[in-house]
Amino acid sequence: MPSPEQKNSPHATLASDLAALAAEQTSEKRLELLHRITDAYVEQGDRATPAEHYLFNEVIGKLIDKIASGGRAAAAAKLSTMPALSDELAQRLASDSDIDVARPIIRDYGALPERILIDVAKSGSQAHLTVIAGRDKVTPPVSDVVVARGDRDTIQTLAANRGAQFSEFGMQSLIDKSAGDNDLQALIVTRADLSLTAIGRLLPLISNELASRLRDVAGPIDDTLVEKHLGAWAADRQQNAARTDAYIAGIRAGDLNPNDIIGELVTGKRLLDAATVVATMLGLDRFYAFNLLTGGKIQSALLLLRSAGLSWKVADAFIKLRIAKAGLYDYETPPRRGDYEAIEPEAAQRVVRFMKVRRTAKAR
Image (cartoon, rainbow, N blue to C red; front, side, top):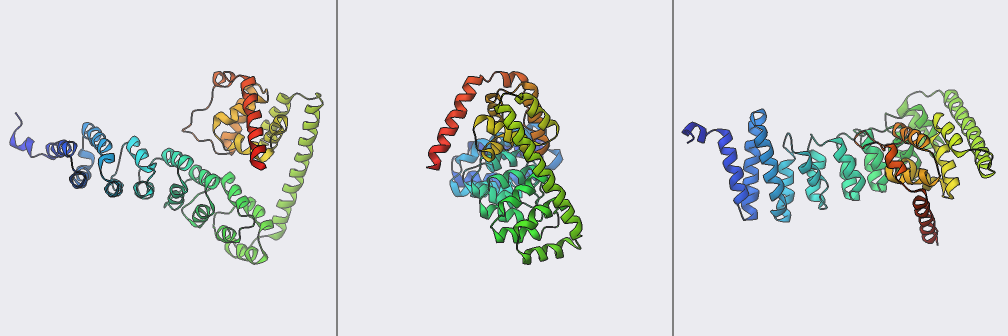
């Protein structure tokens, strides 16, 4: 039988409150108890036992949907102040279809793992993306997805956020999306994290007024250096494009082996050119294919590579280059040879034919 001291200990009180919460039937009382238990749980800090961690997340997870809709948002706001939630509960709340429930977790829960943010960014609504874009800190893997999926308002929110960080690929995509959008361009030129490559990509798109503002923000820019950089980049790009066209012609004529050509392009880290060759072999629009091969689900990329008849060695090298350059992140499990070779080439080709028919129908 527990002593009076044990009955009055913080652990006993928390266990008792959790039991009361689990038994409570009314939504209002559940919310009231949740607030009280959360405060008690936070006060315990590191003293909470693993069993209490488990029990807390278990009870809250089961009851969160039983609280009335308005109360669920209040519950999420309270839970966002927690030092730690189970990943399962955090993801469930952050991806809730009700943005009022998801918002406090996405915006305020400091321990929200990056991989959960990426998952929410990939599958959530524009409202979810906008909240993500406005977080105090947005890491490059997350901002890459927001740029890819976000609408104009969301991308502007991200571009204006000084806590947002961009990969080279993400910044290039952001700049490309600013073409013809003066408001977005105005936000980009004020960023302090623009690399010389980004500036070179941005300058041809913007007005003289914005170019002047860009120089003011970036400090003195050596115009000859920029021109030299852009000139070298343009010449290299033109040379690569000409080589790619020659490779495609050789493949069509049967003089060149696609595995050899794409393997060479991947070794040279020419992701765009490798994707262009794959797209041409499959009769797909190259930009559409590039998005699938470098930014879509990994299964879509494997399907296109398999449909093109590429060996596992080449496909594996392509996927590794995608990992390095275009936003496939560590928490995703890289494909294995067995996964790739389990895809029937004929089935993959049927899917590609269906994709082409569907795109043609949409274009009409």
